[in-house]
Length: 166
Image (cartoon, rainbow, N blue to C red; front, side, top):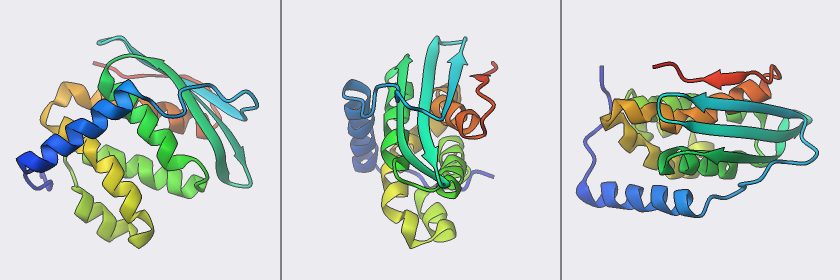
């Protein structure tokens, strides 16, 4: 079931601008020197690679950064992820991971996610909603979700390389 509503041309243009901005000017594009966790993501099909580092204390992502090489969508997603998660709880990180998965695969739209997750997530979900456009291009979903999978590997402490399979 594809629950996502069709996107207007104006909204599509806005979302493209957000992706391009984060892709060209990524935020938090550095590794955290005093990180408590680190994980890598690799998509061998397109060459996207990302390393995520975070400093976690008292169940909170106190600082987060990434280094990566890849397409604009992958870099933009990593940039948006770090912006959204800095200072957030681990519970919030897990919820946002789930939200991005749903947005990118077209299973839910931003309105449905905001309703389910509550007002605390409204602004963050609106920002991340620009990633929902990849749901129309299934091969690009992996580009957008790779940093998020690396994040979860980092936060779960296994430090393994997350490899997106074809």
